Image (cartoon, rainbow, N blue to C red; front, top):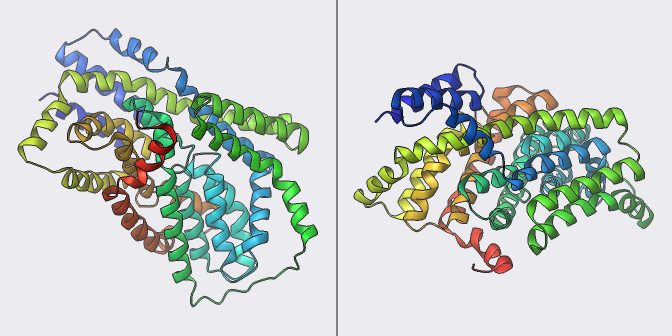
Length: 429
């Protein structure tokens, strides 16, 4: 089969340092030249078609919401309010890191953005209370994977567009798995801190202090309400929710908090544009990539193999989890979704796995990959912020990874966790 050497060639390009969309494009062009199945202008036409979906606008706008929240100081205000409740007892700041990430996850949908925003504020505070550096970095790093699991989630939006499944249902499907992972974070952190000698700087609290913090954070707390209400209500599309949330945060930051100056906005739009452009280029290349996978009937051939091997859905999902845990060690989530989902999703549906359930499994699995070396994007971000050694941070994160894998098994074999809320909110249709 000509597709196997083409796939290998694409991975060679990737490991040689080329961008994933360039690697996919070159592999696609080489496939067309060798096979002669279509003219080369198919690459350009499928790229245009791939970027013509209105729903794709949700991705850059959700990125923009997160960047605006951080730049305007809204994230900091939410952190201060959370610290008021749980920051003044032993381990309080670790729990604050978890719950702030859970709340911020309802806004940005990006793990690296959440990691940078929350860690840069809480790591210095945790150092003052004598938290071990590695533990402080590990809990902040691990908690940030909640961002792409609890809606809105950029990887979930990307996966839904790629596999042509309901974006709203997939986003809602991540809520209960996100709560389960939050519980795991709390349990592991509590076990970690049993013998730690943490110095707690207790501050006098009263209703006036709470009122001040609530006033400061009130407008910031409306942003996740807009997003969650939009996703759950169904009255507006996911794209419209992202645009409304971006507009709201922009107005609040400019005219109420007055922290979004022209200089700050230029930097925010520049960062968002660069990141979103790389994803859009990747999505543009998906069309030709999925086209030649379809022409070579890869999904059909693998479906036949699965049928001949008499793999049950449970065994197939175990195989997929092992595969993606390994893939997550080598590449980021979006490239992995792009390469593997056009093949795996049709097989999953064919053997009776709910596509929403399967999509949640894939995203949770690949988010764990953000914590696993050698790629482990969150590890590198956290090392820079917390100024800790990569190897020691990897060891400190290991108990969280084990807990997350156990949660992944529960999510995999208890499909109700992923399908109950979408069916409840959006119906069985």
